[in-house]
Image (cartoon, rainbow, N blue to C red):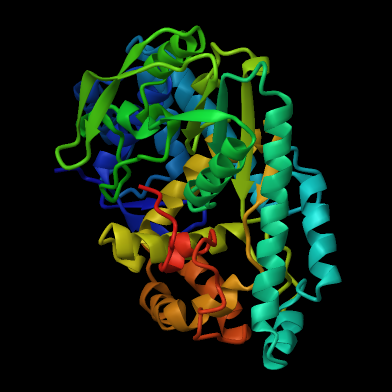
Length: 447
């Protein structure tokens, strides 16, 4: 039994010491540089504990930074310089993200699609939907169906533009990648885009990237035991690149099959080939991640990025956060399609957010086109569905230092939902709307 009972986080809060978190962090660093030896990570974690016990007295509360310094030292001294480098880079990136979060927009951020945001804001102002007060006023005037129509029309216009851009490059393109963070509306958007391009004479062959997951036992976990499916390193990037390169050359490959029930992957299962008049269609979180398709020339791929870039100010003058919209969307979707309780989604969201900040959002500006998938009318629909839950989570996690992230998000969303005018009747929302992917009632057969 370890002689350490508590650890001090960067915020100064004191939380229970969890030795497993050390080996998990080492394993995540190893995965990031291509390693997948869990036993070695656990062995190194024990060495870190041994060093700590030599350095610190019984009852000492080590700081996170002190533990991380020891991890780096142990990795290097035991001949794992490559893993140590990955670990160090992760620490540096985390520090930069914390600094950016603390300074907000006091300096330009390269990964923010400013041009797209400006166009979205301009549209919101023109329709009096750039503030919660504005949309509340329109809803009280009985204009909710009109808001739905205006929002859906703006979204469909963007898809028309994307389809034209892809068609213009159809002679060279071998694959279209639809990417974006969790719950950005990739499934419905991909389906709608495909319909448009079929009318233009283009034919698509879908590639299901989920089949390239490594076995579940090889995935890294966090201190709460959550498996990290959000990282691109959960995917066999080397095999993906090999298959994409061969498919682009007209060769046949055999796609693996991933069984989510057993957490096992089976290689060489389904034959696939794209012919001269066909284009590969890829729907993936990590389509923009450089290592995802590094073997494919830029001229052969069209990269589409999706995110709900809602431009709406709350009553306190701050903008509604896109991550909160996606959190709500995922709660609703997972509760229906994955038997996953909304509270579980909230508690897992720190993992989702951490991964996308590292491996999705920084590459948004490398896309050929960006689609804003937010709907100005969605928050009023969310209030009656989830406000009681969020209010309850605020009370539940207020004084829990291990759940500080969940508390902060719940508190922020509660304030937004309390301020928005509720709408109970979603009948004005079209059955083929991207929002139906989350609230249910979709008339699109996307299986």
